[in-house]
Image (cartoon, rainbow, N blue to C red; front, side):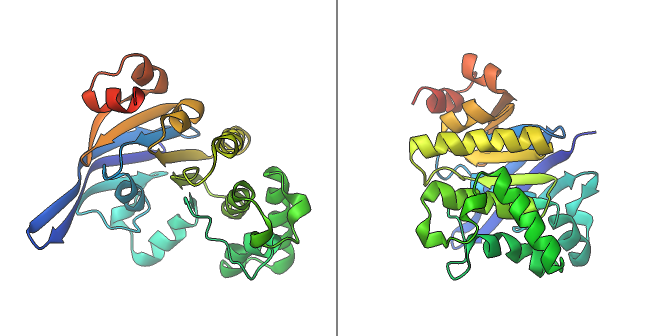
Length: 245
């Protein structure tokens, strides 16, 4: 059975003119340990989709099944527990400016009730994994954008998630830094076998990182397949537009 299954997902927002359909009949599945890319132009519905996957945004219809659990059928308490296994990395690093790097990584562990010594041990382990152990005492303002994103990744990893959602995680970074973050994500996927969903508008991110990809256009999946299939033989205008841009 697939580790993530999205079935006939729909998201409709009420608007002054009636209804705005952000997602329509979106379905896909991801095997455990795979990196799945979702690509589309601005306004395609990518961010809505990623928020629906962890139910930060409640879908209007459809199902999101993660590790055998249908998130739509869970109580708030059960959902909070499942969300502990779902990490999220954003475009903006969302670090706490008044805390040093080590304390930033420890913060969600403290909130989850992990004892201080264990939290610090785990934080240092994952700072080591992202290559920033020597910056443990530094503050976010003293770090480059790429280093801040590495701290954000360490913070997510410290909670030891099974699923990692990356929402435009490299779009605020320069090309060289983007390359190093993509390399880090591949290494994390290989070392920890974390299933990843990468939301992006950049073909390079998909090409260098993902196993499979879905092309999203106007809230619907226009095309889906392995990265090689989509890049070598795009069947739809939406995919061709993204690949040949």
